[in-house]
Image (tube, rainbow, N blue to C red; front, top):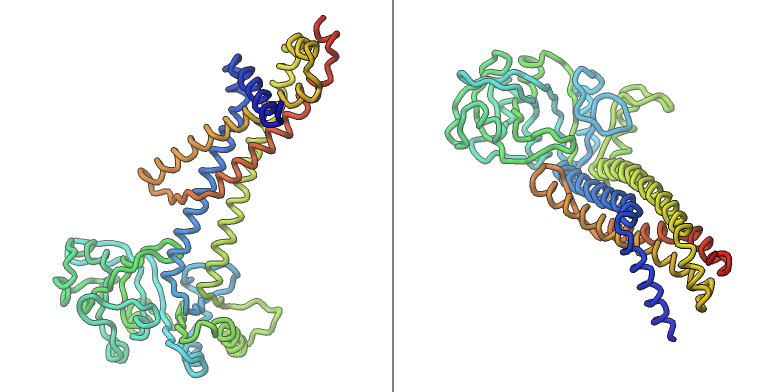
Length: 407
């Protein structure tokens, strides 16, 4: 008998033995089903979250350096109330660095109203360079101008969603020349910004309101410091050396000597993407470990049920040995049963996990990206669990003496 035919015969005998006790077979593969399904769902969500974050990071700009007030190693939104960045810092950077320099200040949860409509929004006070530094221009009306900053003009540029919230219309041109109140100060709408989506932190760009930097600092925010400086460079290859140059400049200006902690933070899109991938990878590894624990528990259950099965099928094993089956045949039969259970569990778990991913992706806002990696891991896990936890029962069955087994 050829090797292939023998393997097929042994596999067939293993499958028939499993089908003879369907409930026991289901309990043996329940852990595998749960673990594989969890693995596929977790990895799909992890990849979906990473893709969503990378999309937001791309909106940050790949040719940009951001200087943020306040220290810290993690990327965070502009920090309010931190007074460590001044306009003098922005001017010093402008004098030494080639690129578009855009200092700005941010205030969140500011009351803005028009007529009877009122909302809370983020107000950004910036210079005309803000538009170029962010690549964010108006679709109707005019952007901020140098004259607006020089004269402390009470004008503003609205995000598209804010137009709908305040005026109840999506017609951007109809709100040009209208007035809004920011902290009870009247501002004339001079432009509406194009749609931009979400920030890397998940905030809505299109619900923001832009005013001249001088007006914001002196009339609206009543402060003499800024929260951020955005630098758009011409050569992306200069991001790292330029970031180091800015850091050294601010160290000198702020009288910071390492290892003294910085009172500012510098980021680029590459660093934000690296941090986002690191967080996503760490979370995915943790969740995969939890799915692996489920598979481990399932493997222990599989081994115990197979050991019970060996005890119940002692006479069957003795009879097979008596009619010529060798120890290796018995060993491979029980290994085949173990692998059949885990592979069937893998198929059912993969189908269930894929179904959940499709449902979540269609009917919820959970980001999902289904790829081949979790299915490859599922096959690998099925092989490992089936072989590792099936060896001990198979060895015990193969070592039974035929005469004692038939008693």
